[in-house]
Image 1 (tube, rainbow, N blue to C red):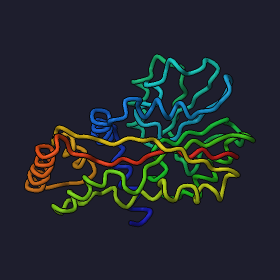
Image 2 (image 1 turned 90 degrees about the vertical axis):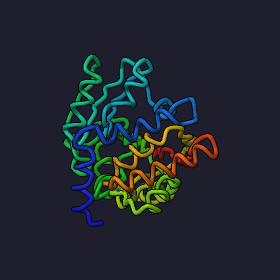
Image 3 (image 1 turned 30 degrees about the horizontal axis):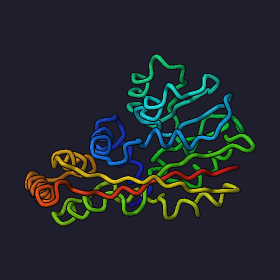
Image 4 (image 1 turned 120 degrees about the horizontal axis):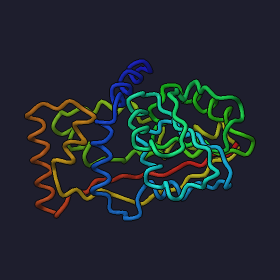
Length: 258
């Protein structure tokens, strides 16, 4: 997939929150780790009571909705997304909170050098066409001693569902975009940051409603009616045989220091 094709695809996927919400819903309803992803990500932030934070690809703002009561009053938080549709959803979700919202591209950040103590990139760097350029921009806007918190997934993410989709000829339109992952992220970041640490989050999905998994698949592909029926049937057979359809979801966060 070319960088131009990737850019067009991602813009279509994230022009609003509808397709993203279908994917989040599956994780929200069927993840087995009771602590919760967004709570865990917030736990990883090691920042002073007075700090300036920039989030790239903030999406609908779930990270902050989940942790608003934990945010120190001295944090100055700027939320960005390249999608105006996503940013508008975040504005609505957080309209009574003192955030700054700005449309921005991670490859050309509209901020001065050394503006932030931390940059957060939650499950989004694999969508950026020119990652070295984005890493350079992130380092540029970080203060000396600042940190990048970049979460991502492993190559085995959603493998069981992807295997079934492939079995029925359903092609995921997102497959070619996931090239920043747990296996190669440290090497990519190491060229720009002095220290890179990886922390892993243990979890999996145990899906008991086939329709939710099919909705996830449909959010990343364009299955025919027959393919949808075949995928639904296969997942239902797994549920009948085992009580649930198990899906792997390796994920974690890189903490990269300037």
